[in-house]
Amino acid sequence: MADAMLTAADKYDLEGLKVMCEDALCRDLFVENAAHTLFLADLHSREQLRIQAQVSLQLMLLRCWKIMVGSYPDLMAEAYGSVSSAQGLFLESPLKSLKQS
Image (cartoon, rainbow, N blue to C red):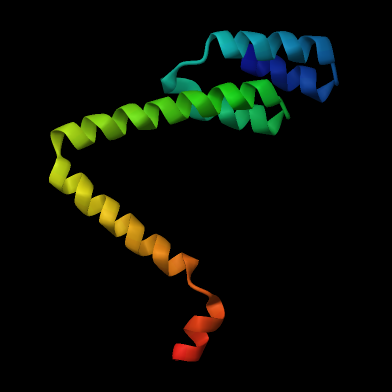
């Protein structure tokens, strides 16, 4: 219910209610609702809520990464190599790509 209240509080610029909703959303923050909470934080410019949601998402990704590395090390090494290769393409200078054409 705090998310709906935050929307209303933001609409009517009720700062005290926005803070109360932000606190409630921070207390009820779980990995399962972190993405939605991050969206709400951005939509309603709630910086503390944004930080908390980002930390929760980072922890979730770290846990998933550790599970995948432990269970499928070869597959994860392959995925990491693919990401590194793709990142290298994006880091190249656009002018360099034009000169090679």
